[in-house]
Length: 483
Image (cartoon, rainbow, N blue to C red):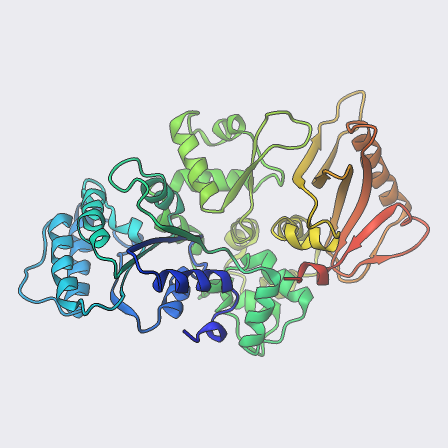
């Protein structure tokens, strides 16, 4: 398949799909990742002209009447089968009947060559009390698994559903998935390649800003237009009377989660503090009771890459949940309160209104490019862990917060200061004093053999002067664009 030039990045994913296509056994492939990340595009490009049957579940976003969801899904599935040549059957009333009809169609289409069956947004088809999963299990175990030329590809944005019902299934689908492919957002380098492919001229500084807003999500980037600046593109996509992504935040969660409102409560709360909150703090703030409901929702948000769970350095076993979805952070901070202002970004990009967000959003981008940072530090082969560090102050001591520590097995700890600015960063006497205070506090918690390396990650490097001497390593925006 000669389609590499048509897809930005995704080289490993395409090679894996090609390998599975050419295998001599039945393959059951689960593809998952954040909504809008480009899963369907990847599969359609990789398997171009090779589908025997394809179908997409109907989005629940516009289905207000829950009672008719099963009927709607079955009707849509039936029409897909008719489009692929099904004859002699009436519209099915159950999923068991629907998959029986599909097997009849596939048997008619089977010419001995590889048969690729692609079902997109599979979780949408599993409506309440529909018994979809048992019928789907029967379809794979009773028919697909008996045919060496079958390649079943299923795809879904509801990552938690995909993992729980397919990968971790303890029933009829236990151990049946032969491969999983997770599709991740674009890195900065992939964003740059995408814009170059589309002939959109943006500087690396503006590509970083686009990542800070849109999180490297290809669907969002597809709305960028050449000839427009980052500011004008962002205003067009998110602000004004008819923004391209109107109501995207609400649609995003309704399309993935059955408890969308609880999910949004958690996301809204996490957006208020960069380093996040404990489960107990989240429960208290949202009113969602501690227990299975909250745990399942946090797991679902984590597996769908909206939030992350981590243990801050020095906190023992205490776990925090932190918002890591750039788009959600920007939406809650600026789009919701200002969406009617058609030129909000153009009017405010250099103002103090967006200063605090820039700092937080750039830190998020750095967290999302850990491998590039480690490469710049030349520690790709050194085992390390990444964490944040929070020390609360009291009457006897001043607290501090470090948003990234790289704790290495070679006895070095990189204390990373992340600064987003329009020129090289200059450290004055006050800033140097704050940095050295953090270094001294960190030293007090380390072993004697460990050393702290003050590390600056900034857009355009460091202006060297009399207050910059303690910085051991400088990482620039260009370093974050490495592959």
